[in-house]
Length: 167
Figure (tube, rainbow, N blue to C red):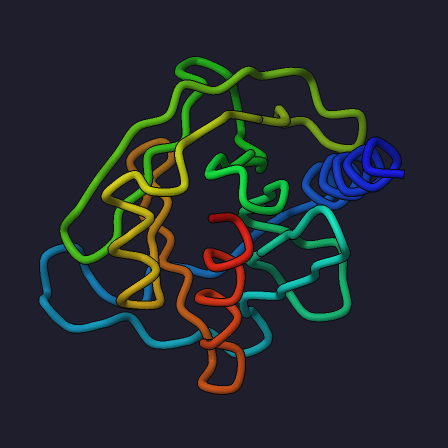
């Protein structure tokens, strides 16, 4: 059952991530000091079952996914997924409140668009994720562009739920 759940989440992530097109622009310039504002329609969505959980940032009721974080209950490990335009430097370069981290990624051609599907592993207790857990937002840098991912007030508690589940 556990393997099926993980496989189902992975397939969903691959399918949804590969369909992503244009996304939200940075809502706060880098270094401005203020938290980014939520983007209308985009939000953090949380889903958990008995063994696995997913926190995904994207457009409501669509397959437009910007970043997916998955974990097995109490594992302390995250699986990251998303899309990029090319695989020149396959990585997730993540920022939250001035804390940054780079996670090398595996890239494979997307089956649904011209970009690539990226996947990586990371510790849930990495400083950038702990800052994200406290502040409630993070930014993803790709090709010199910064996209901020901030929750709407109603979904902000999902971030803590996710990290509490992951351990």
